[in-house]
Length: 201
Length: 256
Ligand code: HEM
Ligand code: SF4
Ligand code: SF4
Ligand code: SF4
Image (cartoon, rainbow over all chains, first blue to last red; front, side, top):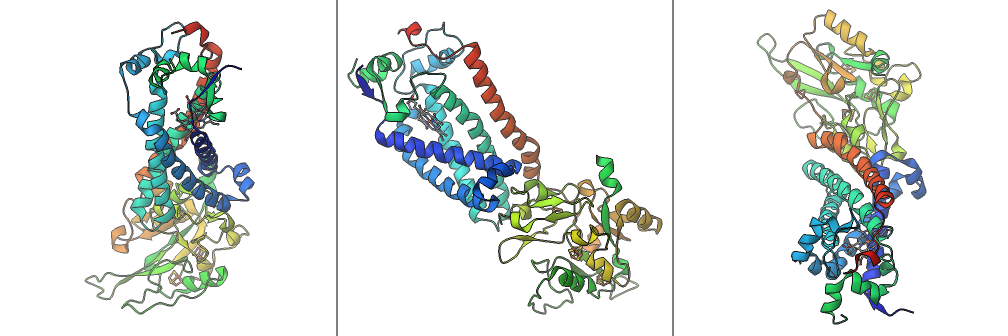
């Protein structure tokens, strides 16, 4: 067996799946509310129960998002010249011929994705609480309703891209969110700067 | 489609000048809909209850507007759901509890209501109320009666024909022929299902001028809702195309 290296701690992996599970559940029930999809609401026994599930799912989601800040927020704010170059070659996603600069633990696409999720996540949670608890204030309700739906659009576009990039588009990556490990040889190719910084290269 | 709808669309025509303020309509509505009484206080007006409530689907608004000829002029205006053609409440309702009947009434399915109160925020006329179970209540144009060929309870009981029920187009045409200068609700929000025959400007009767659905709700309905569906479909399609046309990252070929 090839030597393995840990990229994500057990805590990161567990929290990721709480975040992902709650987020996807919120998206599915959100669509059901938006388009009155009864095949979905009937799974919960109706819209009333689905609303309760959606509300409390939102609480789980935002708590999990807060926890994730401990894991990713610091990295997500640090960019260097290689990161800039990464954008110029579109991360190597549009052509396999371009030379992708050496990356750290996360590429700038992932870092921006994270910041996007944090921004949209805070917005969707706050506005969700607005709709949930401030029913008697028409202005709060209208603003919240608008913000909630703008953030929803961010999620339904960003999350599928993330899922695709972390599974089909980058074979081997999904493994990281299963047990947190990947082969050392892969890590050296994918994240040379990170490997150097932890003295493995 | 649009034509179909207008052709068999029913409406209530309210004519304040004919109303004597007997409030029979309020009582008939309570009776048909089995609504409890409300304890209220005398606050210096005959208007009672003071506002629409979960147990008051319609009220007579007692507008005191003295004129030169008539120092004690009252304009009695029956207030209730307007059964808007372009109904903000239906647009925003996340559970589909509010729906339109074949006659054009905006009715609701109590069991489906989740008590979110979004319909209140999107209604231009501040109509929906909530009962003690947190379920929406409002005038439903007696959809159960008119669906069976009867008149709404309030109309049936009205002794002066201040409330009339019938084909919307006919009611409006007749009111115009009778010389009413202003037909409130003829065009607003795609045409209201409660239309008012006025002799004076609507403001005098306490009516909202240029009622409209909040613009954020219109924006959400016209752009955000489609974007959320097209956005998801678009990125899934883009991912599939990317996978087929360019394909996944192959580490070996791009050795650093
Ligand atoms: C079934 C769906 C999902 C799969 C298969 C998946 C997979 C992954 C994988 C493999 C990683 C590790 C990437 C790496 O270390 O390079 C990751 C990271 C991450 N995931 Fe997911 N994920 C899913 C859903 C979600 C959802 C719904 C959210 C958000 C709300 C989310 C948020 C994150 C975040 C914030 C990271 C941290 C690093 C980054 O920015 O990429 N994931 N995910
Ligand atoms: S029943 Fe007719 S006359 Fe009596 S208050 Fe109602 S609308 Fe006016
Ligand atoms: S008046 Fe308000 S509650 Fe009645 S149909 Fe119009 S938007 Fe809905
Ligand atoms: S139409 Fe029916 S529900 Fe509406 S006010 Fe009249 S009696 Fe009440």
